[in-house]
Image (cartoon, rainbow, N blue to C red; front, top):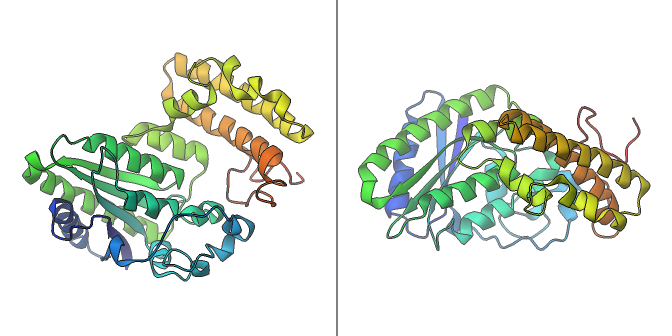
Amino acid sequence: MASVLAVLTSGRRSGFTAQLLDRAIAGAAAVDGVHVDLLHAHDFNFGPCVSCFACVRRPQGACVLDDDMGRGGAGALFRAIAGANALLIADPVHNWSPTATARLLIERCYPFLWTGALKGMPAATLSCASNQGMQRLARRELCKWLFGLRTRYVGGLAAHVATFERALAEAGEIGAALARAALEDERARRAWDDPECFEHYVRHAPWDPLECYLENLTDGTLDAQASPMVTARGAFANARARELLEEAQAGLERTLDLYRAGDRVAAARALAEASAYWTNATWLEFLADEVIGTRQPQAYRPLPGRGQHADESP
């Protein structure tokens, strides 16, 4: 049986957000072959990541912190996420954004980056606001964080209590769609590479990586020559890292050409490859020896078309 993990990150167990989650759970449970587990994040003990990098050095060892997202992968909340076929996060809007609890939950999924265990996992979100709202902004933030984990974003609700009845119906539909995706995941998780992931978010998600990455990689200019790949080249002493910078820069220029031509999908796929070269270059130069003290884990951003990293033999 496929498992949908529904996590409520609100401290109010019967508030508007909880009611939306109940309706989504009902929609999911109505799909044959699907079981829904409801967890309240506030019932679990877990704090912020402490940047010890133990999970990077020993990816299969997971987090070493003694809490419900740690204990070497034995923490109850960590195990629940690892064992699910789909993830649903229901979150109220706080200060025009997702809650600190939702951010904390996703931050502590950091170990999954190094194993790739969540790549392609179906995920959905419910954001519920009152007063001034900003529910759409909150939904985009949650979507962005789930992109970082490389989950497959199935859908998201940006709800305001002023239109709550309509939101309840939409929540049920999202729950059912997520359940159907969970059934597919149970048969075989379709883990994807970065170009596929980037394309999916550009096509189907409320947040896509294209403008954000291009702004970041060009220092807000959309000019390839303003990229740190050019302006900070002298900071790279590692010869292999400098080679990778050249690949990354060429990829960025291709991406910008496609972006200006209006081909967002092709630009997103080119960007995924360029950013992988940039990741490998910066890891080699700044992280491998001085900060983390290990090679990139196999699942994390291998070089395009090679399935390996810059510090590995062909």
